[in-house]
Length: 375
Image (cartoon, rainbow, N blue to C red; front, side):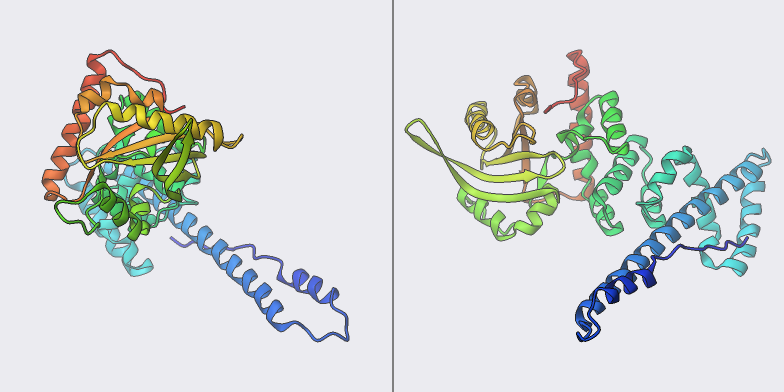
């Protein structure tokens, strides 16, 4: 199997001619400026070529997998498919290299099983590399797999970032995972179609702050200072679209001064996001405190093109049933735990899975099929 690829390069000659035409013949050529323009052209062309090669490779792998699946694996004879693929791989490796080894051929078959819609795949292949797809093949849960694929395409994650997100169990920690399946599918469909995604895809619980260097008896001030000392890693944890706007933001209401612990802006959501830090468990009265801040931000800080501000109350602990009974999302308030020490990975996995199952069960028991929250 051979593939001949041709790529349309950028029109370099007319561009340079245009630059030279604007220069007076008696004026020395601005070499630095010319060099930067040419350099930009070459880099742009290289980026286009890499993107086109990646897309061609991904689509070729899909067609290879689909052909194998249709012509070999549909045969009912036990062991026939495995043996045939083994012999096929031996030939292909000699002609085209290790990328067509037996293991990769089976991955290509799995590829067609997980991504059967060619229209969707054509769009994804412009944003995700084959290495991205290989990582998500490890995920059995279709919703979870679709979440990571959607976030890679939307957020521009590298393969390394994808692995880190999967290792930290981001899906299980994202608020959307605790919603009924129909809500999850609706949000992921919106994300895939490049429509506005709701905050549930970006809000998390718990937040993993194990990178902060905190003593056992830390205060809220210590927690805030530690976050600001390592703001870059904090933003990586809460989400790269968060832009830091300030700490201890002073607001005046009536004759009293109040202070917002941390204030951020989320680019994709187009919302101000305030974060209130608490060192103890969540208390119902915290809701009234942040609601006051939200109303002030809505009136005095929200720009005409922005959505309603939201609040994140970060606590050391919380009672999930209390939080759900208060129906906080209707008031644009999200309550989440932060963990400064991580349990063993298996314990973390079981705890997050249990929380997700229990949250969905409570919603079903209450007969609650919510509309998309935080709207």
